[in-house]
Image: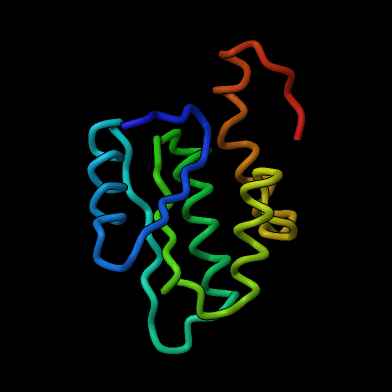
Length: 122
């Protein structure tokens, strides 16, 4: 299994070939949690953005190692792909947080930033 430090992996194969199982096994061996959205009736972009907020909280404030498992069946709205593309290219999702939510996230990691000797910026 290849470990990508702060990287991405795309598994391609026919249905039933074990892509999800391999991803979960790889996450386990790397000591990562698996984050996967749970589709429900009426699941829309607002709900997807809320799930992404949970993911970013796990990664940032909680400082957890996480694998985001996103399959073709999770694409119930084409807008999801644009958000995923933004995550992969820039690491962020535009307008994900309101200003007050963003400030709360920033404040939750401020001590960790200071411990590492990094510059305190938004």
